[in-house]
Image (cartoon, rainbow, N blue to C red; front, top):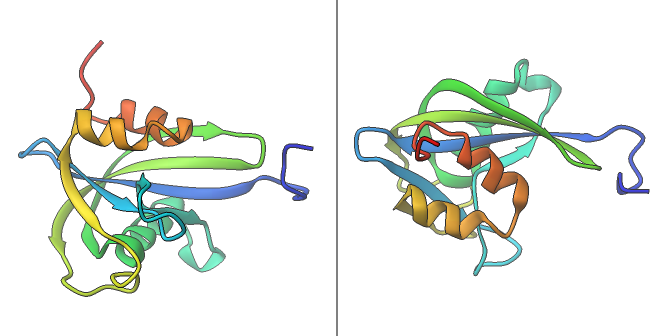
Length: 136
């Protein structure tokens, strides 16, 4: 079926947390698999209002990231999910956050971030379109 039993694809909003001046991306570990790295992402909720707000909320919940959405990056459609990517310029990191006991976070350069998320094609593709990606 390809849609995991859903009648319509799940809408997922993904933040690409960056420190543009330092050229760094903040990656986090998966809750389910602590050895796997991801970008903060999660389902859009009606209470979010707009997709950008969902990306910001997920970054705060999953990574303790506060900042400003600077730009829309891309939308990627997979069989069961539609991913919306937004670049989030980080202004501060909370020392304790909702999922701080379940995840680790780490600032890395673009190449290392890409290496860590390449296991998930949608994350790698979204990151490859960020402002920190090398120009082709």
